[in-house]
Image 1 (cartoon, rainbow, N blue to C red):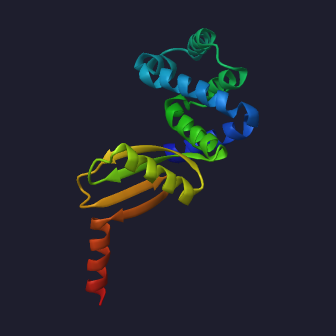
Image 2: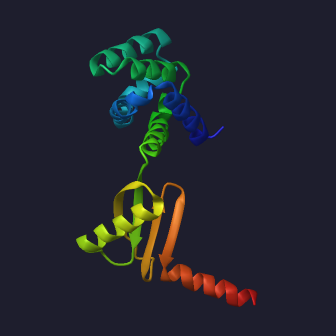
Image 3: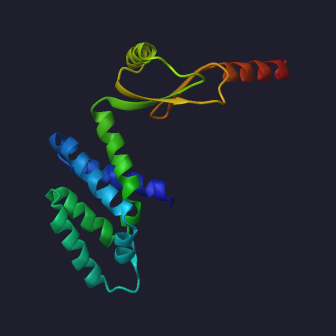
Length: 179
């Protein structure tokens, strides 16, 4: 089973477990814990080493949890991930959980690829139009993409809106080849 599929299962299960009114707080805690475990290779080495006895690894994990002082939900979830050997995918699990929280809030990150830099006013207008079109509150991440000839390409969750010249030229070329 792929890491992504396993992470999605754990992310979904944890999202269903957490009380709806606690999702945003838990999201922040899980991000902090995920960042901690993924930024310190030594932690993962100790917690996943077959040479170190499991009892010592559990004691080490408990000391980490004691220092971080997460909520009961996050603490228990970290213990579960350790017991199931899934701490190595905590970042992917967090990303899945976070995406579910954002969807619940009707919020998303829109990645906007442009051929040329956009002015502040253009970004504001684009954001308003994309929010109206997607019916979501959006944060925009604008990226200059030199592979585009002109126009923009917008990615919101799994949806791609392609309004660039290269895409239109490719469509035209395919249509002409098929005719």
